[in-house]
Picture 1 (cartoon, rainbow, N blue to C red):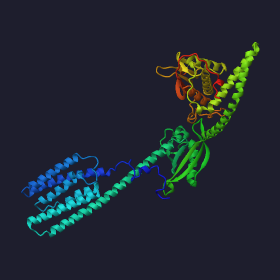
Picture 2 (cartoon, rainbow, N blue to C red):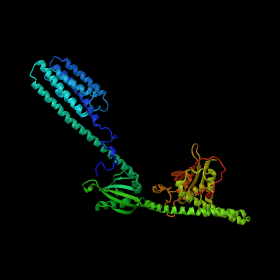
Picture 3 (cartoon, rainbow, N blue to C red):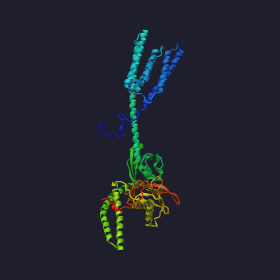
Picture 4 (spheres, rainbow, N blue to C red):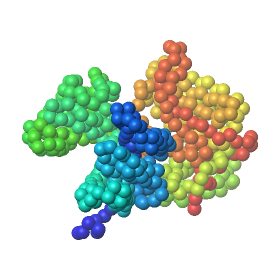
Length: 576
């Protein structure tokens, strides 16, 4: 495949021949200011030498001194008002204050000089300036102008003095040829230098972009990545690797020895095996993060060569959290089970609706109180079963819901108090909580039955991890001025591990083997359905033991106008 047929590279836009994004090379700017400074120094040196020459060998040549003074003033003005970048390299009037002035001044000095001083070599200065900063046409024009002025000055001396012009013209011609040769060679070298600098700038920029992309990708990988050299020193590691290596590596800068902590010994042994056998290694091992916790990890190593010597090899180690890998597999399995459950719930809904309708018809004809209690019991349980079916169906159709459900205007404090009271009554010996309701009479847009479901899930989760104190579990409401009403369920449990927190609201994800992983997912979906928002945060709360850090789930509600609407029955809202 030819080069033209090759697919474009990520960095094709950085090609020096086609890119418009590359910064201008810095060499022309430096050379431009260098030439202006050299002209100023040359003008000052000429003025001083002319003054010294006139003092040593009078009489004073006023024309030469005047011309030198004017040239010094003009070069100083040009240097002071110089732009950051040189003028356009093409031939034009913008070069007259520099190249044109130099050619005229040096030729005039050569014409006005009366002694043995020769100013012809100074013409090389404007030729070099044109060759370095200008185009080839400007270079040849400068050399040609310098040569013509030198020939004219030589022929004029012949007409005034009548001397034989052959030798001076030959010398002027050779000097002019030197102007052309020097100009062309310097121009070629300058063009090559500019080309090499553009290539160097593009390569440097491409390397910087590639390094930034690599850093960004590696830092956001969920799997840990460590780079270890032959000295067993960790040269680089990403945030996921720091998390997997525990608190000892959390604040450690790269460049530490992998065997610095005993809990990293399995990784050190694997790195040694990689270097010793000169091939990749794969192993499942256990890392003891601290005295109380361990992590099961899957480790893969790859050996890269950074030089000709074996000591230049680098071991790249990929560390995967086995619990996350197993959780992903379990999530896929449970997701398939969830789809089956949704299909079954869809099939259950129609018979359930028939049972509910038949029960309603029976209730119309029954007058016996005992039988009416049985009918009401059937109706109550059918309603509960309908709600369960609806929640399962909610998970299956969550992506197809058109938007938020306005729900019912519900008094927040009264509804929260009723839900918490009902939850505690189911097991008064174990279920204790502290209520702090300060939302006032605010009405929120939420369904009371859905709020009960959300609170049940949050309180059940908190009950598993809370302490044994009466204020270990707290439920509070707030309505600050200018902010949305909020509900917080706080418990003094241990902090969640980052790997668990990342997947907290995902369906079918749970840190416990007996949990389906649907509770928090349903809570989030129910909140979003009513325009509310739920989030987890680690925060502190006031207790009898002082302020303690704990786990908190915060719900932000949408306010609603006061109304007396009644919540709809679950099976009445099911789609056809």
